[in-house]
Amino acid sequence: MKDANTSSKIFQRVILLCLFVFFLASAGAFPADDMTSTILIGNSRIDVVIEKGSLQVSKEELLKWVQWAAESVSAYYGRFPLPHLLLRIIPTDGKGVRGGKTFGEKGGFISIHVGSDTIFEGLATDWMLTHEMVHLAFPSVADNHHWIEEGIATYVEPIARVRAKHLDATQMWFEVVRDLHQGLPAAGDKGLDNTHTWGRTYWGGALFCLLADIEIHQKTANRKGLDDALRGILAAGGDIRQDWPLEKVLDAGDQATGVAVLRPLYEKMKDQPYDVDLPTLWKQLGIERDGGTVRFVNDAPLSQTRVAITYGSAAPGSSAASAISIVAGDTAMNFPRR
Ligand SMILES: [Zn+2]
Image (cartoon, rainbow, N blue to C red; front, top):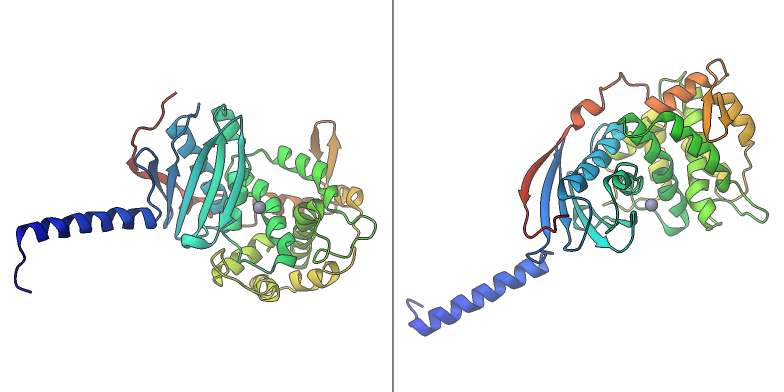
């Protein structure tokens, strides 16, 4: 057709406008009163959407919180796990951070709730966003292996924050010693693949990680650790966007360290209770509980391993140096100020 009359042109423009609005809506665009910012960390990009709602913390404080969590996972993995993350922050009632969820869709997506009464201290001490970001660095596995997804997130999160200097190592070990017993098998336990209680899923998975971390260090004279195995899995393409059989994941980890630890330990823990004498383990690692804190003993048999687990075997700053984040773009609209 060569030309069209005027009313037809107007009609076409209205249709195009409607299509454009529909496209924005279907593409996951947000209402005009939400706010987006972009954080660049290394070669990765985090698009942060703050939904409309009442919050005591400022936009700058929320972005600082996101930046710290991203720095923590980058310090542990050597880089941010995904090229792009969409992070949706949802204001809610009450105080504190809660209800974090991580998805492989949209190239990587996290939604997390922040209570309206939360103050910056609550963001600065938050663990949940780092936990969710650790999930990005591991492939999806079958439901009966859910314990390894949650176990890694539970175990790696505080270590990652210590390495990025957002958590004190004494506090980290105090909490591990205080909480890890919840992952021990109870009467009637049928192994990690068959016992889907809260304790066995989160802390049972974390127990698997600690045992693996110690064994990798022992077999490599403290040159390699679980961090090397997890970086190897990520380097092999195993991130949240992928569905992998667990055996493939574990083999990629063992290949990265050069020692067979993850697969044999899984065989021992998957379908039977595998009890661990934790008080003896803490003694070997040189960790003594002292009221509301812990003291480190530096001539215990596994003291060097404890230090390597905490800080990694790489030179200080080498992994975190590439992970400096900046707030790049900022298109704020009607963000509620306190
Ligand atoms: Zn989780």
